[in-house]
Structures are given as structure tokens and as C-alpha cells.
Length: 400
Length: 83
Image (cartoon, rainbow over all chains, first blue to last red; front, side, top):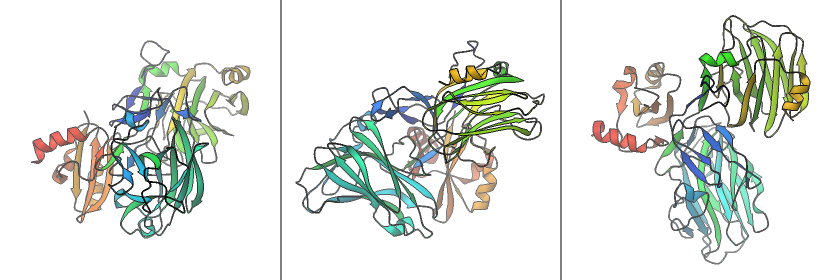
């Protein structure tokens, strides 16, 4: 992955991801990206496809063995229905869920093996209003399969609002507008202690009386994964499928582009949930180590830590949300952090880096350096390094 | 080039011992116990270490799990080595 500067190639990143992955393309459609290729994701905001960002995600497994659709049952049409975003992956991924007499619900296998106990899972699926106001649900078809967690999320489809959430029972839900009428509903469920069999999920009408045959809604791209975040869609056909993590790094000659005694790190990025490792400048640990770490916790607190010669010298933190512009200037006795044009913190602590110096820039490497091993999806629009400590006025201007 | 392989270990301790030879970018996905054996799918960044060789298995494609984009390669290897 090329850096704009330097043009010598010394700042170009190596992108490692040994599997295919998916992204939202410039047309707002989900499409596959080959292994080892960075993903520019044109994520939608409020249903409008926006400016792209580099999508960096941890490994994830979609346990749903067949992403094509439900088992063939009355009231469900699993072929001949195409609509975006599903058509961009596979023309058969979209299902039309129709009422038919009193049969208004169906179940789908969400895992061929039993879930783990005491773990938070994310259940997600795309929904689209299809001409009839309709309440449906995502819910456990058998509480015992979820450790006696009888969870249920009502999903409301309407002409006016598209897809919104109704009541949540023993779970938490969220909905994201992907444009073209498609919304991704994500439900977070924590399993109980004793699991009974493989998991299934119902999509169930909430109506008191049956609709006319042929009336219903569209659904696509079911996903069940561990953790509290629905990551990018992982297509499946017959078995659970894993997408590997991205690791993006540059070392060696790049050290000449990193300020070795003073400097400034600028980044524009978004990480919506807690992540122990967003990115590093010089990802070192142990005796003599130097590093500048950027992380974020579950309370939306951005944390910046500078370690010089294995001594923590600067620790800044500040509340953030959404896509943010951040600039961290470091110099012994004079360090400062700005976010979105606002002063966050400063420090007069003195420090001296060890002779090892600052050696690399690393995004999303999956081992523990700070407080845990949690990696979460993060989107980057820019990372820039300056070899001087910019003035506070420059930091404010840079992040505005 | 990466390599996708499937393994059955007699117990977790044996699996853990083999896992010590994994490289940082290798991705081992535990599948749980199947027929009393501890099962893993592993996508090696390069060639699988020798420690895994005794435990390799070749279930008919694709078994219960795969890595995204590696179905065809596994089927090709299955036809060459597993049948």
C-alpha cells in the first residue's frame, strides 16, 4: 500500500490478509476483495455512500453455514430474488420472506455446532422494506441453544422509516442504513452457562393476523460471530467461514520519516468500539523499548501512550466519537494532543528514547501490548508523520 | 503462498503443543470436539510446520468450516492428497 510521501517507497506499507474479504464499493454494494489487498470501504452514513476509508478488521468467523437463505419452507422464496447489496456478491443471497396463510415465520440454522457458554455473540442480517409495513423479529428459536437466554429483537419495516428497531428482550440491538433501502440489524446476545445443541434463529412475524400471500420483506447476508460488533459480511454457502485479520505495517527505512527525538503523528480514523490496539508508531515492548500507542476504550476514550526506553512518559486521554482528526506532538518536556481542533492535553514530562529508536508504523497486529488483546474494526482516512513537533496552533489547524 | 489444512488431535494438550510452532500470521480456528477428537482448521502463511504432519486429515470438502477464498484450493489439494 503506497504512501504519498516519501515517494521512494520507504514509507509503503505491507498489507497482510491471507483470505478474501468484503467491502462496500463506490456504488454502495458489497463486493469481494482478494487476499492481501487493502480494502477501501465506501461505508454509508445515513444511507448515503460517503468518502472511502481504509477498513482494518480483526479475524472473524461467520458461523451461519448457508448465507444463501432459509431452508425451503412455506412462505420463503430463496431464488429469483435479487437486490443490492446482495446481488453484488451472489444473485441468490437475497431471500424474500413472505406471509402465507397462518405460516408467517421460519427458522434458519445459525451454527452447525453448539455455541460457547458465557460469550457475547453478534447476530446480524440485512433487511429491506418491500411494500408492506411489517413487524418481524430476530430471536432464538430455542432458548436452550443459547444457554437459556431467550432473546428477541423486534424489527419494524415501514415505508416511512425503512427499518427500525422495536423492543429488545435479553439482548441489545442496533441498525445501520446501507442505502437503497437496505439496513443491517445487529443483535448482541450473551449466552448462558449450559448450551443445548446447535443454534437456530427465527424470523417471526409480529402481526396478529396473516398478511396476504406474497406480502413480506427482503432479507440477506445473515451472520453470527463472536464479539459485540458485526464485522464486514463474510459470505458462506455450506460451512462456517473465517476471514483473517489485516496486519498493515512498514518498518526499516521508514524510520527516517519518523521524528526520532521530536515529531508529530496525525491520523484521521474511526473506531466505534473498544480496541486495545488501533495503531502504533514503533511497536516495541520489553527492555529498551520505545513506542507511541493509540488505543480506544469502551467509553469512547481515546488514549495515547508514549513509552521511552521502556518507561511510560506521556499518557493522554480524551473523549471522542465518530470519524476523528487527531494530532499528537511529542518532544521531551513539551507534548500535546489535539482532536478535531480542540486541545485535549499537554505534558512537560521529559523523556529520552533508547538507541533502538522509533522503528515502524503498525496497524492491527494481534498480540498483547496494552491491557489485553481486543482488536476491533477501524477505518482510516489518513496517517501522517512529521519529524518536528508542530506548534499547538498548527495542531489545532491540522485537526480542524 | 498460504496453505489451508485441517487437523484432528487426540487431545487438547497435543494440539497446544503443535500450536507452539505457529508463526505470527498463521490463523488457527478451533472447531471444537468432533467424534472425540480436537479439531482445528489452520491457514498457514507459508508451509505447515512438521509438528502438524501426523495430525492432518482430509474431510470431504469443505467439512464444517473454511477460510474465505480458499475453497477451490482446498478441493484441489483434497483431490491430490486426500483421496
